[in-house]
Image 1 (cartoon, protein in one colour):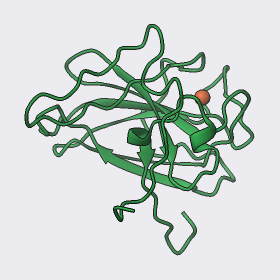
Image 2 (image 1 turned 180 degrees about the horizontal axis):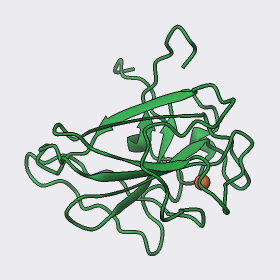
Image 3 (image 1 turned 45 degrees about the vertical axis):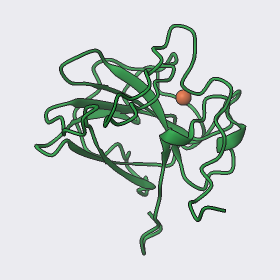
Length: 173
Ligand code: FE
């Protein structure tokens, strides 16, 4: 009604799971911190640095870009941003490093990675990309959700602040 896109309602565990830090409300003039979410069982330490997670034969599904900022909005260069997701069928690679890797933010705090649209798997309802980033303080672990995915608001971890606005290019990416 206010002309903004409907970003949906948070799931019951969005941004608040036992053992996961809850982000404090922003101070005056500060940005709201990114909600933290579960790491889950599939984070693979030692994944390679690379800006594409595509495997041979994959078509690119998503080019995910963003910035790492502190609460004041100041870009954080040199932050290590790890990504991991399931394959298109919802399976994680627990032996190798398929669909996981990390990038390092540039001088403006920017990152970009090309990957597939992951599958989803029980009990999750939403396709999601796990993220763990670290700069000069504690790591931040969260998940990102893709705009337009029908399962988002049925997922207990879905949070509107973690919804990635998407546009589709001529190649369908
Ligand atoms: Fe997952």
